[in-house]
Image (cartoon, rainbow, N blue to C red):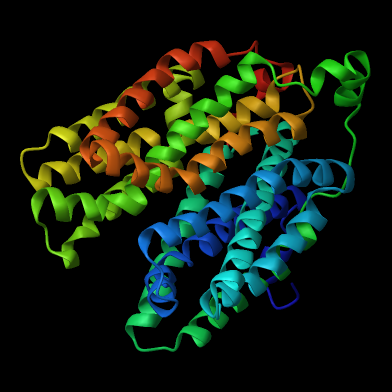
Length: 404
């Protein structure tokens, strides 16, 4: 802190809290995406088949589903700060363990811990973002998720660059771990401590038992996030394979599909507050879902590979603001405590993210990759219906929110 210029140190604490939250979202994308370039190396070193590795990846999904509700309760009781600090420290240890796993058993345990940490960090940083939106009356979720996407790009490109330059895997993993520790030291001091808002405490005391059961609206929010993250996982892990198998695109160019998707997703999220201000929240989700479905249908029916690239770009733009807005909506609904609602929605969301690629793989074996993409496109368009079912009356905090 004292190494920073005086003008930066003089920023109000509310500004530092936003910066800290943005850094935590960056770390979430950075730490999870840095693992992706290591996958082929680990798979080859342990001589794992695609099916064996797919089964091991299920451990990450199971760990995530177990950790998310637990992290929500801990963040509510003790504050987001200790949960975020613990999980970031865990990531700094888990990534080298993933890279250097000497056996299937160790890799399975590391993947379980990786999924648990990803789920716990996802819940805690989104809960912190929801609280900041409520406290500061600003719409910031799309911006935070855009920074998470930037972190993902930085993680993938950083690890790929280090490996491409010939840096050893242990040293590359150590650089990523040190980067996560640096983010932790900068961000954690300004993360939110435990607090019990009077409004939420009063609401919980009225209908305590009912609030622990997810309402139909909460389930719809979760399903929307599952579909959106499923499409994102399909773009990340299967777009290159699709270009290669469907259009015989060279492996060196197959990454262009995800690059187009990710670039437009980042642009859509970073400009999300302007989009929401112009269209309104409900219409933004409506138009986004229709656009995302159209993009994936363009991929499916593309006559040539560069039209498929356009489809992936449209998919990225359409998918950009769906999940951030669902998380914000879950945090504003008045019928359930924020941490419980967010845990339910996160379980759906990150299940789609972590297990989605495996589901796409299993589906492609049965009906083909194009048909799986078509089903996902129909699901994206179906979000337009689920959006109506998940809407809730605006709270006082929501009505007074302004764009960041």
